Image (cartoon, rainbow, N blue to C red):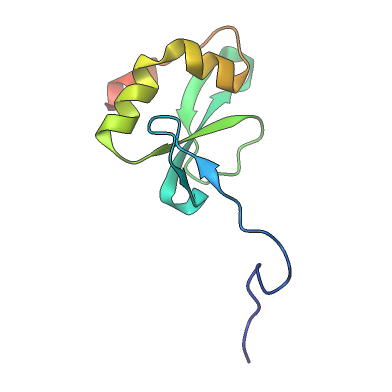
Length: 92
């Protein structure tokens, strides 16, 4: 028995843009970052199911570096006024 894929069912495959390099890719190939609640802490969304706005980024040191350096653009993309990036900066 053959299983149907999303495209076979008529649904569109989602495409997301990397925050660092602006290249459009399948979300499965990207990392997703979200803001944790009202605390403003940026965190890696490993399961890609966290509620709220998120940004996608390639798993590449150049793209991740641009994500960390572009705090103003990141706050705009996430629609937040305060952003705590200490956890993410320590990873890279």
